[in-house]
Length: 203
Image 1 (spheres, rainbow, N blue to C red):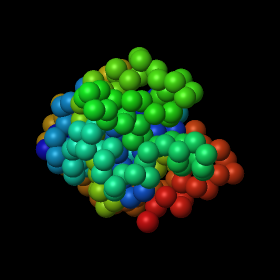
Image 2 (cartoon, one colour; image 1 turned 45 degrees about the horizontal axis):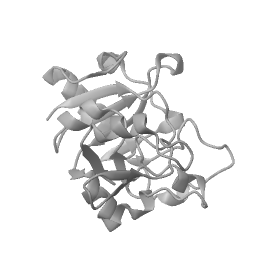
Image 3 (cartoon, rainbow, N blue to C red; image 1 turned 120 degrees about the vertical axis):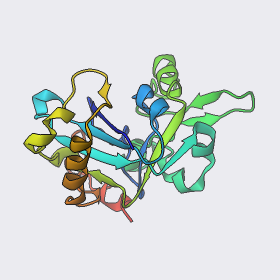
């Protein structure tokens, strides 16, 4: 088991997407997504200006290709739908497989309106894999991010990510996270203040 930590620069509910009973990392952080395996932990930390707090942690229970992800009915709610509530607009299941083996980027947080954004598309698809945590194996705290205990300050990172931690740090992390409430505990940092659709996304 490995532990990856990185800075969540924009916590919008898109990457990660903690809604509908699964926490998914389908976009951004391609290096982590290429390297992670089932059983590994992904930890997202807020930027230094926001206190380097723990936004979320997920244990990878499942890994899918983009085609599998899009076609799996379990994740149909994560396909963005722009004529609905905010939680649907933040969907991360944005790559529709085409017959020629390519993908269409849907209107989403990564598109240019209803047109594709070639830069974000290449960056996202470069990660190859979609990482999935089931409902009891992720801890999302968003705008109420958790202060890290002193012995976990080593999880804080600047650019890129970290994935080389001592057994003692991993044990301390597992002890810390096991005492937290799993699931979605708060809306993302960037979320309309009067919209509660994030609450209704949790089974």
